Length: 533
Image 1 (cartoon, rainbow, N blue to C red):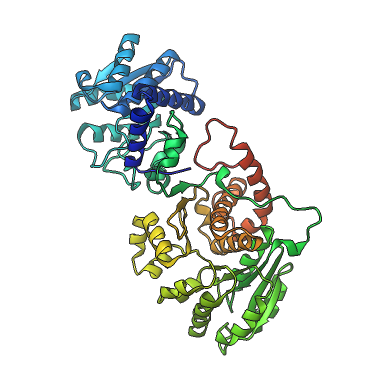
Image 2 (cartoon, one colour):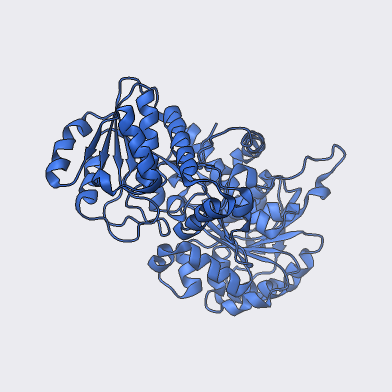
């Protein structure tokens, strides 16, 4: 699903009204009606319950007036608190304000701090707030009555339904502009906005629903947007296996990972690749620690390789590695491999000369961070999977600078170096060399444990070995990794599950992902926050 800026959404609305001829009042009615339907599913029934609609004088307030009508007809004790005088409300919002008045919906003008103070008694008794104060076009800090109203709304215990976007949230950057509403549910219209799907805005948005309000698909397809929020239906899964197939039909992953003290990383990469269905997995390992890996691994094979005096892989291993790549279909390079100078030289040479598509992670990323020009010399497609600290080293920026604009950082690096980039973290970003961006909605804080990144490397590399194109392997691998973590957290608890638990859960997760993908096309309202069965 495309993710847009406030300006891109404004253009879509304008073209729908001016070129297609859909009246703005129809869009407003559709927005209010569908928001009410989701409110009913999320918080209903409303009969006899107090609902406070906080409305501005623009179109966001107009959507709130439509909602107020539906609540009123549902026998709710609805009141509208209008942060403007009624005579300043114009256009389609005015039409719906007048309808509310004629129906008998109570409307209170909030024009001063005294008006605001007098409203706090009904607010304290509210069952639900409808936030229709400020829309997606906000660009300056919230002050005055609006700021105080937002602070009061956040202070009271009632649930909050945000109309289009939580008031005070920057649509494009996902940051609070001074005070911002903490919503339980946000119903956004047309397409999701950037600020709703990245942190910290994601946390203010609550459960996000995106609804169609009659914006034609043709106009959306003509919008030159490169950002996409991944959903179940957008994930590419593997084809059903032929009953007469064999292990040789499903790829052979070569893994170069692990060193003394870091054999666990190699184990997790190999096991996760096997658990996503890779036909064969071979681990290349320094000869001296091969006996350890022979004990650790059962299904994956090992390839003892010549090693340096420090018992690590180095250029001394290169000839054997290149020979071992014969008949392999992908290479996973880096987890736990060490950052000794000889190993750094090997990594750089493999980036240049590997005939296989490569997933680079961990120590391999450190090895190229001093000279990223090697990436443009690669023979084969590269997928890089840095966390923010590694990304900072790759770009000579600070971690804070990377986190301040993760989308731009990922996109610029992928385009400049011609690679596929997976910038890990809350809402992992996948950037393609052509400029496309994908935002992953799956995963949870329980992934903040040693080895979870190694599992991701194994998943992506396994899918690559199975035959997925690099961009699809990166997208599907990230989504599957996060969704598996969500399923494990639901079963075991949000904290304390281990990277190995993810490996074991992958086969069941793959099966459930396929059934969820099929079912997602039938439901009218699917939250854009991953939920587990």
